[in-house]
Image 1 (cartoon, helix red, strand yellow):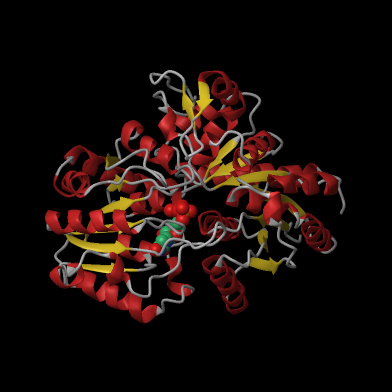
Image 2 (cartoon, rainbow, N blue to C red):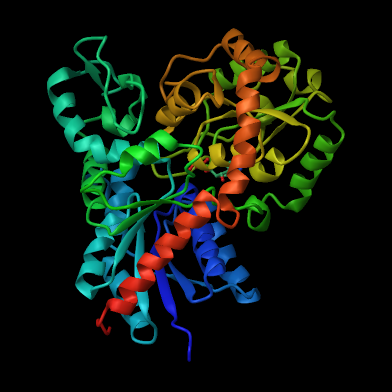
Length: 495
Ligand code: UDP
């Protein structure tokens, strides 16, 4: 008897942090169960060079491999005009929405030749749920941030009422709302401790701007999906995951950690040569001696902050690998690479620290974290970075910058005891982290907090066990697949 064949279709927000784990999950699903193949519908944002390099590399890789994952680059659409949006998230949401006719056409075409078993939307592509509903295709959410933040999103409509009565608009230029009473704390079920308001994402703190409405609207639509796949694992976030299993919410499937172990090696333009020289330098360092600093695919810090870091690093005396990216030029751009990084660092810094450390641009983070010379990671606390760090057993010192990273930092330090704090509430426009503050954080990361280091080591082995046969994430993926396939077997729908 011929084997049933199922096609899973994915539509991801065009950012590295969402797209890369979606691609990896598609591979993971098709490897786990040979009945599945997957198609990713790719949205191209012209300004996002790094994302576009990545998506181009996917098409090339797919044509050379035995993979069961295909990529369809959707036709380009007219971008929203500046009068239509206030924030980059507002722009991205409108831009995604404009792809609906193309998404519908692509899925209908696929469905005419194969059995489309599921459409996976992500954190910010929930408007595509309309298409799944039109075509009668079961719709799931793939969530590339932690379960704790998923719970926050579910709780946002209720929180909105609290924000409306207990907060006022700030008169500072940040435009953030501030609590009327400085002692106010927020209760979010996926966090076991009350959340200080300073942990809220900047989009939520700008309550009358389009980014906040995007959050609310997407959060509302998560409940219209049949199930939610989260890139996390039960042993890492037990409280958050358990508190999500309440009636009324779609079932949650923690299937992680799903990582791109090859990292940017395949696709980033800063060719293999430059990355190889970084790895050669790491090879020459003593085991567990280097601190690695990196602030994500969209992270960049301004000159005065870079100078404080440089002074702090120099004073600390630790060996370092420091990834610096040039601040983005426009609202929609991503950070670029400095042509002359020396100009933004204190005079003579590179000469004085030659041999002790390296300053670089985009770096193959996963490859670096896997190196035995790395002892600690100063991270912006993007969820992929946290998972990569846990996987390689490298403790993090928290320095959040954007998105939900303040909350991730809070979870890591205050809830899970898996990180040490440099700052939990840093964001664009915050007071500088001065050299002494960084130096203190580095000492805690590199030479203190044995309990944190022991927990990170333990979580490293749990992260690997979760994916093994009968591990928690393996079982969760199996039950997701059972759910999808039994729905298909019971369905009479013909597309
Ligand atoms: N990354 C990298 N090199 C860099 C910066 C980032 O390889 O110089 C990778 C990192 O390994 C991670 C991803 O980009 O997989 C960033 O995802 P994350 O969720 O940590 O943060 P985001 O960039 O979405 O804020």
